[in-house]
Image (cartoon, rainbow over all chains, first blue to last red; front, side):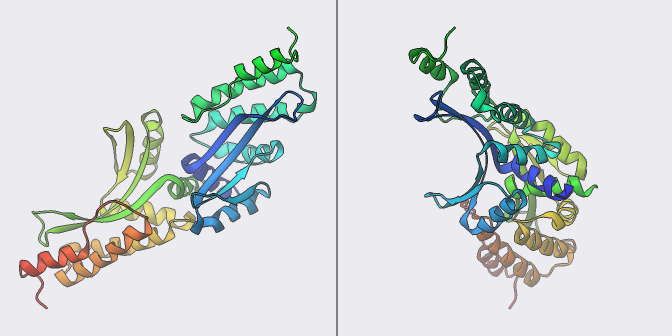
Length: 158
Length: 158
């Protein structure tokens, strides 16, 4: 990908994109929770073609029409997020902290099948830091909740 | 300026910047109104350094601290707006219409001392189109108000 295109997208991401990582409850997961990294871009539907262009650049992620009239392009699988952020990282100027933390988490998640409960909990604590970075006002699941889950299920043996 | 930097800023402008042109009442102006083009970038105060970097790239415009806790970098003089937009234009992907219309208006405003009331009113009509392009919900002055002003003051002789 050309530096100009990546640079443009990094600017767009700094201005109007979202780099995030969240804890998501998954009843069918071994440890009860998923650590879900994501990159999201929203636009009015009239600019859906722009989101399709972004998707064509990275060849990962999905576009969906939200009920509020917006189109959303999101990349939310580990390898896709790593692919996008590792390419944009040299050009990002505002969201470096978010980018680096997600890349760090993603590097460990690639081996998530082998992650011990202790390692998973350590990662979940890194996720806690994210809410503050993004000035998020949404209610999110904290690592303390994951720890409690593991304690009750006797998953985490101290 | 390097294509990478301009491309980044174009992306940021498409995502979170504002290209605008407005009619502003000016009691000391010959025709009673100013056509005011502007480019604006807002960030939380913690990112003021980013706005200072933008300002250093273009060497035009001002940064101010708003009462709502945001910092704002704006370029609002004709030559400054022309300088910034003409450099960014090749890289802009979403706000081309706004960019081209402002560049068109700005090209005529450079000779504004010589603009006849008729020409000014024709330009003011182009400004009307802007509100729609930006999905603006703010109340703005329309060209019809300028026309009425000119009629009452006998500035515009049909």
